[in-house]
Image (cartoon, rainbow, N blue to C red; front, side, top):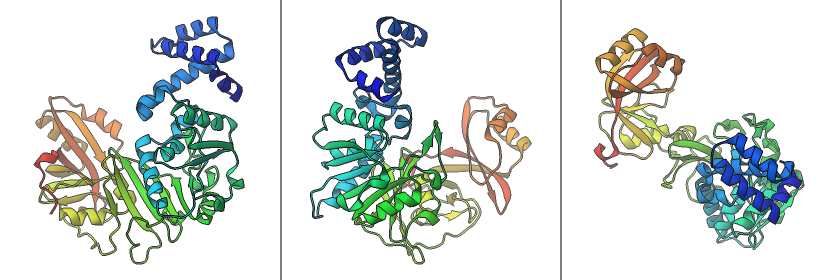
Length: 415
């Protein structure tokens, strides 16, 4: 879909074509939909309408009821942040700016289709969206209008290199990390590359830079705050807060560290900061329960804090599995009761599962090289019961733990 085809979608004729395409796509017959659209509409408009209708259908899982009014590009939809995550970030930006002087707009650099700009506006901020792709700019502008936010969101075509960081109250930067539907993990391959994005963010009064959750710590600048965000148990992003936005909600860096670490759970909003005084967790044999920390806490290196909160210890000092003798309730870790611990052996594991009549198996692993899909095939499961198998290692020895989930209502509250 090119820019001209998208702009045609915004006309009355384009809206009629889009409505027809959505109706046809809902019937789940792509061939019939394409045939019908090409019969009643010009080929380019028919293709654009069908593409947009398909993207809206896919976008429902991420954008909910807003998806039916919004516009998308394939890459823009893939990279767009979930509204719940973008909303959390936007509310924090708004809170930081409440007591700051100046009434300029927040600049959303590399704004893409405008998902973050929309949430910043919904948080009460004026937003200037900037992107070097004219199609993305047109889509973002259309989305702001479709959601009734055009008075708060202005979108322009501009390259990140041309942005004046001093001209805005704050910057939000989300470098492109996707190319030809593939995710980019190398920070130097971001667009703009991470060093350029960091230089721009560091020059602003306050800034928020979105990065991949697996960003190596050596890329995080001194004096910043890095927040890892998990949504319903899945790590979604990391953001580097700089300038006025860094540490605005308390906390201090641990001794010997150059930046503050934070993890946040959504939708609850629970947040945890690195505790400079947290003791190094002890290591010991498996207790009665196993705790699996949330991924955001693991990325933020907060396993010691979680271990202290549940009165637990580590099975291995290099692996983020915590064990203990009490089923302590915590939003920061899933809890499992350990039924058995054994050296890893396919034959022994198969026998144990058959004895328990396990037909449904959840496999978790950390520090294990076992191919999970091949393991499932080799186990040849049969039965009505379910079980959780944890594959890990203790002192380089592969270990298997047979576990059952502990419902939250059975666990004891945190003390």
